[in-house]
Length: 498
Image 1 (tube, rainbow, N blue to C red):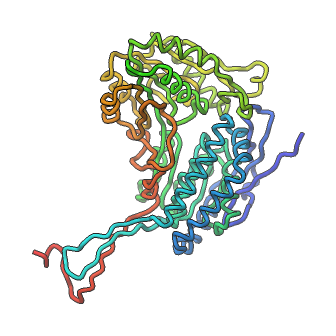
Image 2: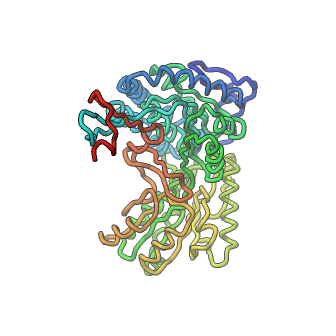
Image 3: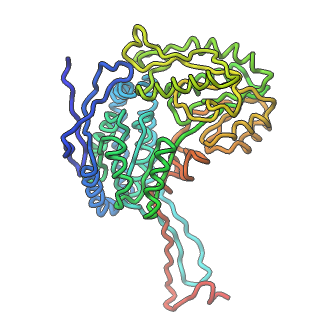
């Protein structure tokens, strides 16, 4: 057996072991016989050390001119591009999604880093006339300080870049706590930042569990803002931890996203969109299509085209270029999927149309594989139609007309992403207006966001902030309004101009 490599934390510019002396293994979900490495099982002392390093580094990093900070980001993007294939393959091995998708994940890091590097010369404020003579007014952004970054396993490098790159270009420093299923991608990301000249303490990496690392990170009072992507339940805990001290928090949480297929839709296009939206990343996206809301006129015709395509999906190890869908990320995630399949089978009226089983034989023996699964005749009140599953399970909900489709689409706790398939521009704009989500697509699935528009959702999906685009700058900065009076006298606004 090959020797298993041990990876370390990155604190204050050095790769160091946790003071606990403990490690955890990073297991390939496609083949659990493969251990990708041992990572530090850190605790509060390691977190506090990383936060202290970031706090110290902030004093000087915030004074580096933003265009100079941006030059480092440009170098990071170039460096990641050079190792894109290596990082993609390692990401597929540690979290399971197919190689084409992990290449997209790494490409998103490159895109986001280039984009935010451009913001080094575009952190625009406002200038505006004063109501008084000989007085100048403007607004400027100022960094917050130390940022606690908590990232999920489904986009382990991309989402880290969504948070860290805007934070850095604004002059903040960061402590990154990655998901325990994907620490190798976080190490790869951090190494690129180190190699490209990011000063010690500006970015720190601490691996470990949510209870041992995440909890002390969100409760550390030297953290100015927590940016978290994950479950709604944990997001509530983050919000509660930050509230007593009025520390900022940015929350990106769950989704129960729907494709609406109206009676004039191009059906083959809609089938393509539903396949990709429902089963891309094995359904393990916050934007995954977990509901298909379809006009009853097309219900049977749609299923006759959709189900054979689902049956033909090739499930397997994501490193195989011919595979369409990889494993669930872990045994526990797979069990959650299986529990919801059982719930769907027991709900009165729902019909399991295809899939529904764990794959265990032959090449699937040592992985966390599940069949692509479709339920039909689902009604809006069923649990499988309302609760996030985070797996390859989609519910098909027949409705009468567009008005009812929009009503059903909105009738969940989440509000991340939605889509409509129609050839009528008027109906498309009506749906775009009336569906209450943070992201909306026309004639495309619920996945596919690009880095230069805001990303985030409404209702319990988030707390009003957005990632990506220039909206991300608002998460990691504060506005300062500046008034410069060169009159040589005391001028009183709202008084002396009457």
